[in-house]
Length: 348
Image (tube, rainbow, N blue to C red; front, side, top):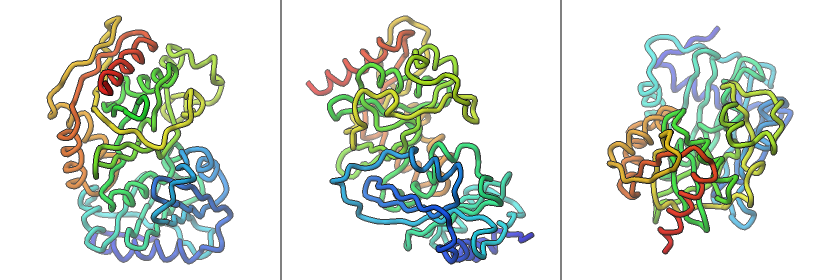
């Protein structure tokens, strides 16, 4: 078995790219999706990941022409001359790993438990995801397939994938940030069920070039069984479907949204939800530092590489947006009404 150290990492990363790309004619499936300013083409084997790519994304509107194209090769031994992935040995930190690759002009990540490698060349817009076998990807991968590659591509253009939810009305919206269990995803679903729009939960594309704009990438929504029942989703979705790796129901924006997912939302505020136990919801100003703590750590931890640029981006985001604490009431329709009223006041 091949072994890679921090010293040999750049050479191995280039080898992975060459092996995966060199087998271009040997992949059984090609999946192409149009995303904001990007045409993504994935070359991969048939199976769960290829299936996920057919429904995990929110395609960009047809009138939005892609300004760039990237190719990702999802490979494993048995596809052309692709060899078994190496094991990384020696001291490992995400930061050191990312910095070593950045010195070579590359981006990448490594998941020890599976010898799962992701390497991206932002200059050529070519990436390789190398696994031991066709389905040996981390359990979270089908919910947001190739997320890391999209992060690296958009980060090179000054944008960022934020680990946040969104809700909006008439083109204006809010970002919802917070740790797991804070009520973020339940708030997004409650809003969708009661007339609000969303450009995604978990991961959305945020741009601060002219104003703060959020655009959709992934269509996936999740709810634990308790939230699924509280929101009445059993009347819309099949409750007998298998739960995902987190023990949650997984479904899509179109399953619960009243309207087609908008191409973007102009973000006017950042909100940090928490379950208060009070009957009525409320919105109160909060310090930017606290909002930064709610937004940045998970976004940076889940988007490998570029830690410093990530902190700068999220710091700028909390500077540009007013920040609020959203205390969640007990009734989904009342939560949606509270957010709708906030958005209506902001448009006035």
